[in-house]
Length: 549
Image 1: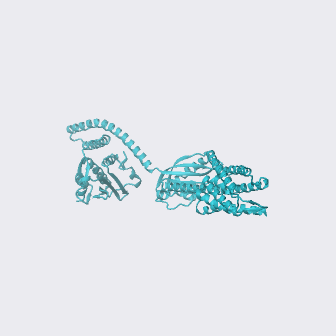
Image 2: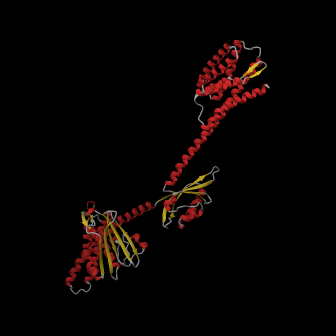
Image 3: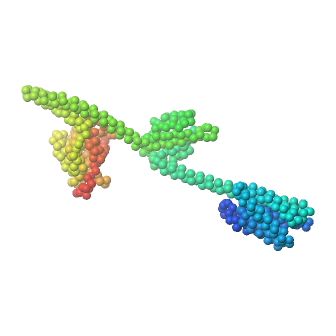
């Protein structure tokens, strides 16, 4: 019967210790705080424990000091003393011998307070403090018993009582530690989940908003992940995770190189770069610089390959522009030297040809020789104008007036070729900052090409208007033989011409002049239908309001 009552007391104590933790689990998992409330609750527990005291053979057993020890160990002296006051009060109300009880209580509270200061300096954890306070309680209890001569002849009673209290302390400490460990585990898990969510959000934010293409591929070439950037870079609204989609994106001409690179990565287990072209939904190929990085697992095997691809279209254009500039520089140097070398003997030939014609008026091919020499002189002049920087005086000129002067100059040639100029002007004043003679040279080169392309005659439509961007748009549409589409991008390159005796220098100089004016030339041509050339020049700032009047 005694053992059953003993177990009931410990069970109720365990329940009372666990109750606040259970309630707290439904609210939050904050650590132990609020010492005052903890002391009050522990005091109530100690009162309950005294009321449930076990009586056996005239002796009374209770574990009211177990919550006192736990309060000192976990929350400090103030909660411990509060709990002790509750335990002392119920003890005094339930039995006599007040003086030994009060003196013993005061002695224990003072000793526990001093020990708490010592343990705090040593930074002992709570569980070790509980054991230390339990040992101290045994010594203090023995001192009180022998000092006040309390039942000295009943050592078994004192041994059972001390074991009863110490067991309660151990049981309570284990419950508190288990709940605290659970709290820390859940808090760490929550922090880990929060950190994982934040990391996932950051990586998703980067992956979904970067212009780089990111692909995660397995060693068997199956796809794990396509970044959303494929949608706005290549135009694919959705991509399924299979190899067929990757084959659809990669240019067929680059597929072999791609497979060889992946195989090399799997064999060498190191990152490699490659230049590969991806197909846009509209059919055009876009060059990408792709970094392929292997991801190894725990056993050293490659589990994934991460492919990060960056669009290098602009870099390619810059490289082509740099190459073109280097070509122009070399051509300019060669042109200057060749032109000077040609001009000297050319002057001699022209002079002696004129003298010879005067002496021999009946010379049969004199005019033909003179025309060819003048043609050579024109070519050398174009070479020099391309090679030598021109210091031109820029003024505000009306583009319409410049075109009209050019058309007037070409009218005799158009009459002989049965060609008619059709003017389609949307306004009379289009001011542009330029060197007038340079702009006239551009129109002359373009119109001469249009005339020469129309061997059977026809009409040349010349339009002029102010577009929405505030630029002067000059359009020249002929009805000539046209230019194949694959050759359009080469127009303006040095020494590139589709004419049998052409040098390509005229268009190249025209491009150079228009570029100086911050304008651009656009070609659109169809074979046997004709060519349309658009020249866009920025309107002079202070005259925009007058354009088109």
